[in-house]
Image (cartoon, rainbow, N blue to C red; front, side, top):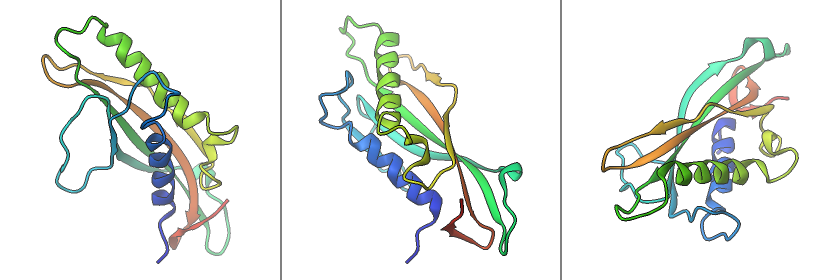
Length: 162
């Protein structure tokens, strides 16, 4: 069964984040990477990444003519990074979040010089402005938006178009 191009990109993105688990290359020890199901079936954990999809926007100026035409889209993926700091911890929360952010960017973008094409399925990828999550006594963290632009056939979102 054909897979939608956006899902192929999501799987590649998750794979890059999964590679952080158990790796000694990062200062943040990742506990898990989740793509939640319909009913959030996970428990928030320290150093957890939750990957969700945000808005899918048309990018008409990148469309291409043809029969059928190729439509361009920009999918925002939100990479939620959860931190549950020990109450007796001495490390500043901002220091932990800055390291987490740097590790996520490194895991996604240091794969190759063409990291932004996600194996040829994307035209471009751009990191957005991070949003900090401050919770008194609960989960702290940040959200790293990653906007990935790709093209598919107008009548078949499983058909990649470049």
